[in-house]
Image (cartoon, rainbow, N blue to C red; front, side, top):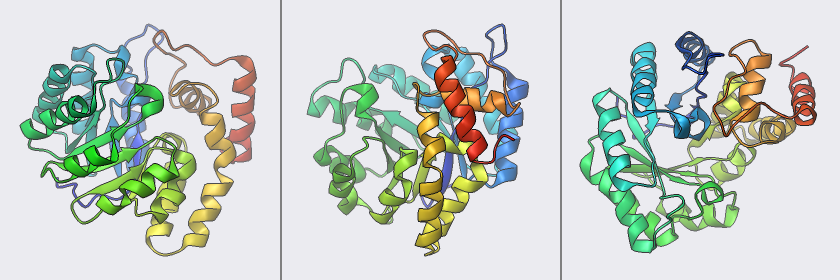
Length: 296
């Protein structure tokens, strides 16, 4: 499936685990079906929200294959293949391509960080080697390094680089790279509290944690803006902020997995160093979910 014209709400899907710590494929199937029914525009598996940093290569491949098969071409499937090792990211990217994904999310080299040229080569190495479109992932709060405006310009010119997931939280940075946007290069908000502001700068939608629990609403917000109903999009964005803030009251994906557990979609299982929410933040999340009409 050609995703170069993709827009809308892309869910950054969680990976559910059983009480024994294994991947819960039964729950994963329910989640995929939930998004297919709710109008989610694409699924990102094995991203930060998917806890892929604690999973084995075999588990990553199994989850990727399962999601591709379950979706069965109805919407695009994108896989997060990021690593701070360029060769590891390349190997993961080629593996997921063989498994049938429609695109890849590739990240800057966290921890070792690299210099300007190293960051460019890290990302370009994958783009040079694959045949599916790549989305750059800029999230300096987690990685400790950012994709410079100059590197965005260089990478946007690559035939296999279709977009950037912008999660720096900086409107100024998004504005600085907005001039690179066009038919061949897009921006997706990586922050659920800034979707409408970034769409006003030309973003084509969001890669969303929030969409795990309110997929139809997030889809409707993005669709409303794209259709010119800015007032409705703004109203959804503002009304959703208490829940969005609660979903990030602890490190992602701890709160969103708790929210899905509260909804009966998955169990409360994480892999260390992630663990269940503290009682105080859990109570705040439940209240926000009640306020959003998700829980009675």
